[in-house]
Length: 374
Image (cartoon, rainbow, N blue to C red; front, side, top):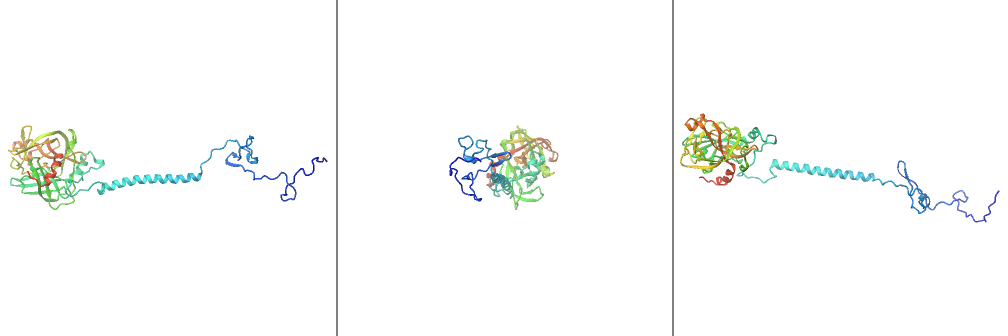
């Protein structure tokens, strides 16, 4: 046996760890570092990165200097963000739906624009989206706002047309339709009949405003803008030719700013038709007189020329664009046979019709409502 040559006491003794014998080597001052598993096939040992190239720091230094995996985002953090994003998307969608709903409600209830009283022009003939630009769509929307006017005077009876512009029964027509009338009867598209009184007339512009007695809740026409119309634009005419209520014809704008001269009163040569209730109102155009003698009391205005079929009884009715807006009040039409003295029932449209521009009417509306008669 080899004996140690080291002097006694050179090896220090350590406290017992349960077996009564000295333990060697001594336990570390701190618990050894445990490997950290970051994923399949990757193990990282924590350490201080000592200068000896092995990480230093005893047991915790192993593995220092190895590539460190990129930190992974917390799954918990992702769970938090998803509800936030979802809530934001829901809020945006709700705002869009809410805006559309508010707009739709405003359109149906009228809360989206300023209200109109009974003396205002009320828009009520909007053509549906699918029917815009069609004669059928315009006719369906506007026909309920066009009425037949029967005027009785000392010269006899005549028939004309009119346009409802307020829900309580204000109706625009030609002055020559009701000139000299002792009584006026108005028939709606529903066949209901009212008595009407004259509110105001403007013979110089061949316009008149009458009011139904006891009417309410009527559908009203939309007055458009005649300044934007062009030659070639498609138009629709609705009226009561020869007493045929609600007759619809169509054509185009043939010309603009035609100088048309008409008689200002019933003594200016008006021919009262006895068949069908039609009435030929004489007018002058291009130095020639049509439908009889206009007499000495006349007025001249700028008119829209159209080839939409117009016949006696269309006077005072509507000339309409393809959006369902009134752009003119039909006022004169050339009937070739009537100038020869034949009855109105033998007269027919030859594609020469004239209408008072709606902007002329709108400029004169307040005067007519004021009860002016000229």
